[in-house]
Image 1 (spheres, rainbow, N blue to C red):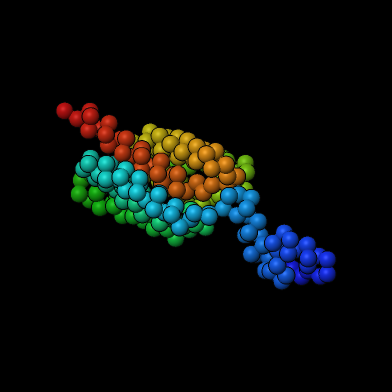
Image 2 (tube, rainbow, N blue to C red; image 1 turned 30 degrees about the vertical axis):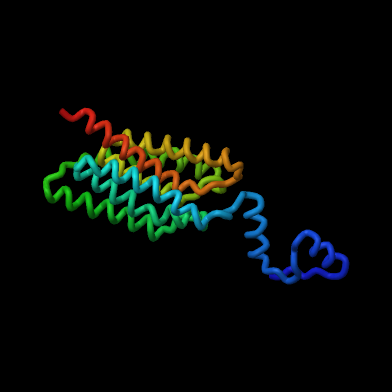
Length: 216
């Protein structure tokens, strides 16, 4: 479908910046960027996202616990999906599935080497992080995508393998940071995936520092 302007309409179109025979997809994207504060600085967003994430993961890696290392690998594996979400406003199923595979594989290897896991805490972590997001998705699919639900399941399970309460901390941090950034930038929409990943990383770092402080 193309837009064609004639006569006075063409002159009016020039004044508002609409050219003749513009593809409808380009028009929709242009309007979306103007209304939502779109990704004008998307080139720099991944760098701004990855630097604090790396710092959090380095801090969390000080623990040395096998379950924490598995969670760290899972969060790191989810990072590319968060970068895509920043640029394109979607969480690719491929990267989410890859992160789930990283968690399952690293957990299985740790179990083979004697690491014990409580399946109930993994399930509680997934439910604690994904449950509220699923409820919001069901109530308003336009405001929360199902990709965020799937990412929260994987990240919550990874946090739950360490301590299911970390999933609650991670979701709280993600929601608070997302709200603060959205209000600060005065945007109508924000990608939530990156905040889920950063919230999970911060929760891991906090859990690591608490465990080190409680160690004899």
